[in-house]
Image (spheres, rainbow, N blue to C red):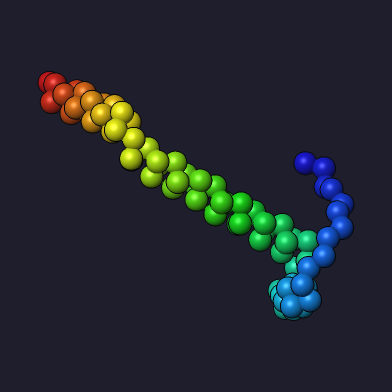
Length: 80
C-alpha cells in the first residue's frame, strides 16, 4: 500500500517515549507508531467480536439456532 504523509501532535511525554524507544531499539519512529496502531486496531476488533458474541448470547433466537445446530452435529457424530 502506498504510504501517506500526515501531520499530527502528540503529548510531549509520548513523543519522548517514542524517541527513547526508537533510539534504544534502533527502529524508525514511524515503524513504532505503525506497529502500535496495528496492535490497537487488533484490540478494537477483538472488543467488537466480544461485544457481538455477548449480544448473540443474550439473543434467545440465536441460542435456539445454536442448540439446534449442535443437536444436528451430535446426530451426525452418532451415525455409523
